[in-house]
Image (tube, rainbow, N blue to C red; front, side, top):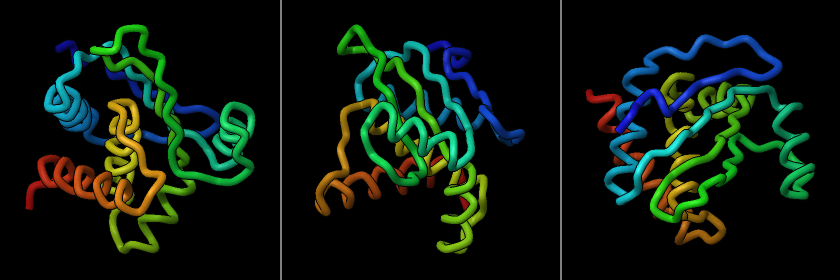
Length: 144
């Protein structure tokens, strides 16, 4: 897999993502374990305002969220998409859950990638399954 196919960007904010290599390897591992090939995945870090605008424009949801994933795959065996992440929500969640911003950012990235692999979190049971997968992949990225 070409880890360069996972690219990081910012939109309307400045933020330096730490540990890009580790994050890329974790995302590649997740995609491979789910039996997909990696296409191009763009991860865009932005503000609450920016993401709320996207959430409203493209999903008709008029509220703040931490992550929105857009599946751009043309091949059902390949992961290609964009994952937009609100740094404001990540920081707030890190504070609420007493975690670090880098770890919460990694969790939200994993969450977005899981959406691109077809996982949903509409029901409580689905949210539990998503959280288990997030925790499993986070434990490989942040070994104690």
